[in-house]
Figure 1 (cartoon, rainbow, N blue to C red):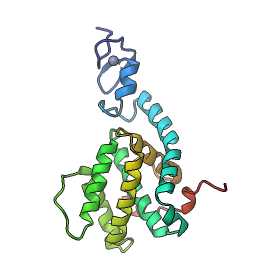
Figure 2: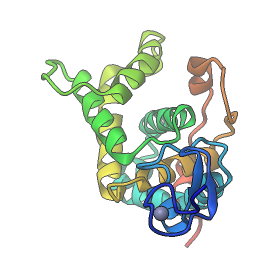
Figure 3: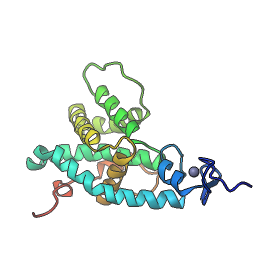
Figure 4: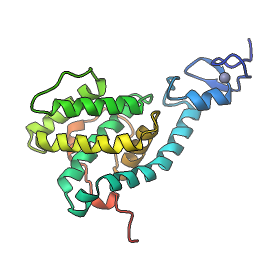
Length: 213
Ligand SMILES: [Zn+2]
């Protein structure tokens, strides 16, 4: 068996890559994991890197969140803060189901979702994330937890955060997932009743206020 990297075929493969079924060089693993390579969530290299990035990015994500939404934090608009938290939780769920989720797919999904909530829906490109999010949000509208208008505004706000925060790779996914993991006590895996879980989330402005300055 050749000891060349299964990805580039040039450098020496040193790490067992469960996604490609062979040895990968550390550079290819570092550059392509979770993006071009569909890493299984239990790969130790992927897991270690993801967890590190999530806690690192969560902090800067909260900062951007607070900057972009200074108005609702000041007004203590709990309903809007909560609605954004629900949408962020949907990113977390999507990531939990598919760890190769990218910023691009999330942003495209939020655009699609924003469009769905418009009175007159404009034709847009199909988005798997938008379909998923819409299905999860529908029961919340039916139960009177949020109005369509509130969810549309929350989507626009989250889209603003997303566009500022993304590095066009996975920074947004890592930041949002990191913040959700730290701020909410959600089970690491399903199956669960998501609607009830979403309804029980408690979001406070303090999650974004960086404490006394
Ligand atoms: Zn390589």
